[in-house]
Image 1 (tube, helix red, strand yellow):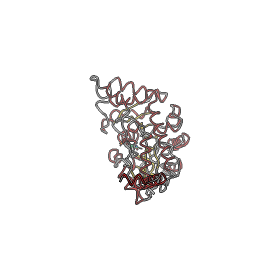
Image 2 (image 1 turned 180 degrees about the vertical axis):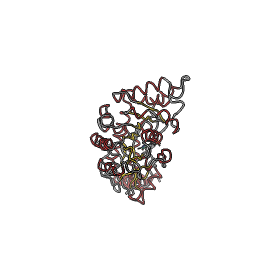
Image 3 (image 1 turned 60 degrees about the horizontal axis):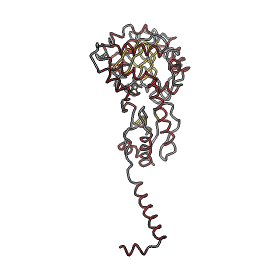
Image 4 (image 1 turned 135 degrees about the vertical axis):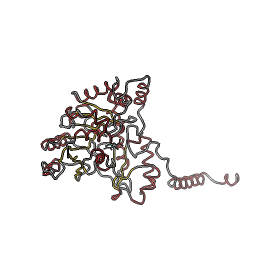
Length: 379
Ligand SMILES: Cc1ncc(COP(=O)(O)O)c(C=O)c1O
């Protein structure tokens, strides 16, 4: 063996190395790359921000009065008033579905209906909770990219005052939308005008309001421009998708609508006894604009994911993301193996369109791993 090795001259050694290199490369294209540790399924899958975890720990140091009569809740409510530049009424709730249900329950008139887009979370992803708990009809309008228009809202005016029809009572918008799109502040203002002129009030499902704010300017003026300044009455203000462990806030910009909220909150099972743990998390999130930094990072990672995947064979992507999700169309026969390797959701199964979503904690290394997997499984 040694003898044989010595007979190979330098050219042969190089050629032998090259062959070995080629073979290894061929083999390695069949080797499944390691899956990303943090995946691209949902910002709901993300970790808790360490600052928020620390805030939870600090709120855990002693006993405190239950049901919101505690210093953390008082401070968090006043922090939300500061954020919106006027006194608002804030209620901490367990989750996003509950936030929407509480908000709508306090906004609906008798025989009232909620107008929303056909892709609204309240319409497709809450297992009918609003219909069941509120006993109200949802009028879901066909949307483009998750968005509806003032004309569509006005088209429902024919029902007003007719005793045989539910009465359009609340317009519910989602910002950012379930399709990762944004309404401009003017679009929201026009929708609010249309709704108010029909005697309706406006709810904003802001499960990802931080991502929207980050994309629209990244400061409190940006937030106010599409909420309080645009005429929105009540917001479901998200925290869970933006670095907190659990909890959302229902914020009444229109304080008249908050009158029944303390009672309705309990009735719809959204009054946690240890409210301080939700309030402490929101305080941490609002402090030093952590909520905006987290969201800006998630948005930037989605842009990077788009850039790194849009030219890959088999991946069909058109618009760059404005917030933290992209929606590629993939070859149907290859989706399952990629998903098995690193989980993500279908978004329009008929069109073979899936959703990849980034979060506050998405790391560039995870992104690189994910892209390697896409290269491996999708052609
Ligand atoms: C637009 C939107 N609204 C509300 C929610 C709240 O859902 P949950 O009740 O799971 O917290 C979500 C969660 O994914 C969402 O995407």
